Length: 104
Image 1 (cartoon, rainbow, N blue to C red):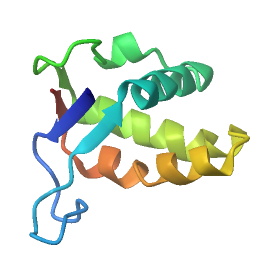
Image 2: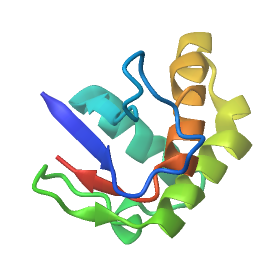
Image 3: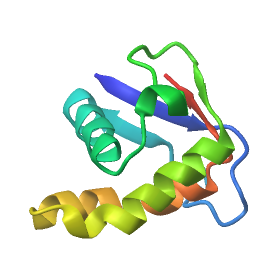
């Protein structure tokens, strides 16, 4: 269980799986909480970005997704654990190319 993020209008260079389907953003609840805390430390308020604690289709706009990508990219160096840096860095391009996310 967690938060599945369905890309709304992915760009042509959005990451795709072996079947050519755009990769969704997927976070277990621990990862979702970690991301929210990380964004707060980076000066962003997840609530103001449209983050929801419910998976019922609330939208995070494309503009706000790009803000998330920028915040991750610019603040990744603040993380102490290499494994946190590794998994979170893989999500930068997803946030930047998703065209907005629906939260499921």
